[in-house]
Length: 393
Figure 1: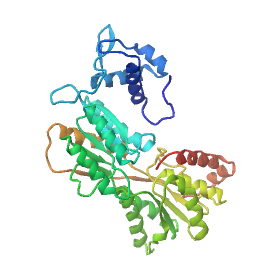
Figure 2 (figure 1 turned 180 degrees about the horizontal axis):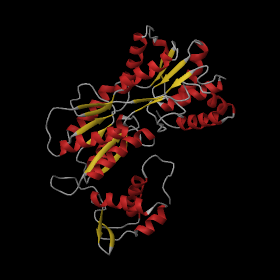
Figure 3 (figure 1 turned 120 degrees about the vertical axis):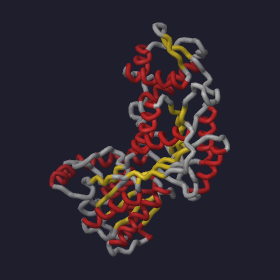
C-alpha cells in the first residue's frame, strides 16, 4: 500500500490524504484510534518522520487529535464543518493547473512550508485547465472550510473571461484570494509572478549572441506568462535588428510538438534555433530533431523555460530559465494570510526575477559530443521526451 514514489507531490501530502481516505474507508468514527506511527510507516512504506509530519498536519486541520501516551484518534471524520472566525480550523486552499509535475510541486512546497510555519494547513486541487473542474474544486475546498485561496489562473483562448468567472465564484463566498504565477488584467487582487518578459528576453539574447537569427518559438494557450514570454522574445529580436516572423510562433499542445517541429524545419531549413515556452515542450522538440537526424546544438540550438529538472549550473542538459517558484509560493501564501488576518490595503503585485541557465542544448562542448556519440545524451533526451509526452503542458 506504498505511496507513489514517482509522483512529484511531497510524500507527507500523499500520506495525509491516504490516512484520511483509509480512515473513512475502514469506518472509523470520532474517538476511534488510528494505527501507530510505526504501523503507518510500515503500511505506507515511508519514514517515521514523514508519518509525524502528515499526522501533525491532520491534527492542525482538525481531522485527528493526539493524546499523550495513548495515541492518535479521529477528531472530525467529516471535515465538512465550515471554517468560522476564532475557530481552530486553519486551512488554505490552493488551485493548481495540474498537480503531477515538478512546476506545481515547487510552488506547492513554498506554500506548504509557509503554512506549516504559521500553523495552517493546505487543501489543494487541480483544474486541469478545465473551467468546470476548476469551479468544482473551488466548491470542494470551500466546503472543507478554507480561509482563502491561492489560484494559478487557467490557460485558454478566453483567458480573462474564464478566470474572471472563477474569481466571481470565490468573491461570492466572501473569501480572499491571491493569484500565483500568472496575472489577470483588471482582477484587482494580490498577485505574485516571475518576470517572464525579462526571462524570455535574456534567453533570446543568449541565442542571438551565439549567432542565431532565425529563431522559432513554441508557445501554448494564452496566459499572461505565455504572452509575456512571446513579447520578450519579439522585443529582443527587434532590438537586435531582426524582424519577428509570426509564422515562426506556433501554439501547440504536447501531442502536436514533434509533428509541428518536423513540419517547420522541413518547410524552413534556415531555422537554427527553437525557443520552447517550457522545458517539456523543449524535450519533445529535441526528440523530434533527433528523429530527423539533426544534432543539438550543432544543427539546431534549443532553449526551454521553467527549469523542470532543477539544474543549477554547468553540466545542465537543457538551456533554460529558472523561475523562483518556491519563493513565489511562499510569498503568495504570506500575502493571503495577511488578508485573512485583516490587511485591507491596495492590491499588491510582486514580480520576482528569474535566472538563465546555460546548458548543452545551446553551447556545444567536446565532452558533450563524445557523450552524445556514446548514446548518453540520446538516452536522456528520449526518456525526458517520453515523460513530457505523457503530461499536459
